[in-house]
Length: 294
Image 1 (spheres, helix red, strand yellow):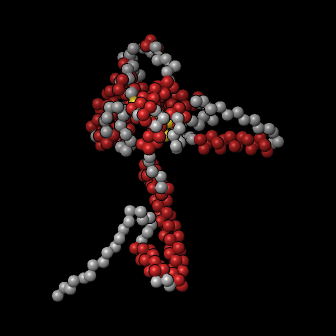
Image 2: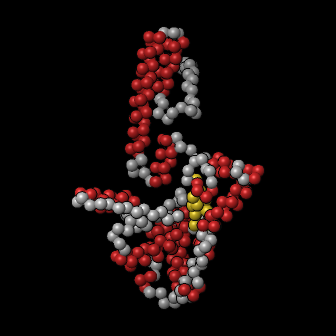
Image 3: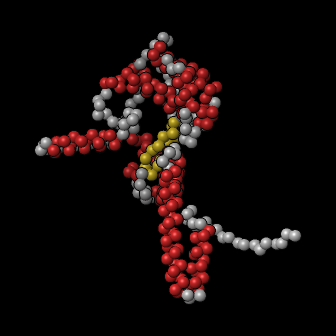
């Protein structure tokens, strides 16, 4: 004969920390019961236990989370880091703060001002003349022909979590259908090189204003434009860029650290510090000039 078991209620709160366990909740309840009975000796003992367990659970939780970030992709790393540090995206609130500086707090008016400023940055740049390059290359040299295998490899490695560009072609389609799409896409790439024509849609971009600092004070100083361009256009640029780098790479300065794969600002700083310290060790002077191009 099965007897009825008593119900037991366990409460969970949305504000609970992720490292809180049931045993920790029970210990807190015991501490609060001791306080309500005014048993201060037991209350102080349980309070100390709660504090010790709290430190232990927090340390164990964050250690496990940080260890799990060592071998994850960048998207997972940033998402977990924001959760651990309590950061929340508040772009809408930031934009509303800027909108209050416009007449009637109008968001459409703010959008027009942002668009006008981003366009003004490059307004003095003139387009390349049409006669700068030949109209087409009917006999494309073999070393510049893009192979189907290269296109398939690049399509297979597309990051599907990145947003598409103006063509609205989902990245997962290009990656999952890479074997079928590699041939047609490769033909388009080589036709573009032969005809000297880059599709107009691939030149367009969806520009997203991203705050550089919070709170936002001005459009000119506190917003950074992030351009989302078509994925296929980026793949063609990468393939052509690799061909160019293979030919001009040996001519680049050994101290060129920017825009090169495998090099970063860390290498640049290490090289500068080495030169400075070497000069100081030899009792020479060090003179430094920094130029910031904006």
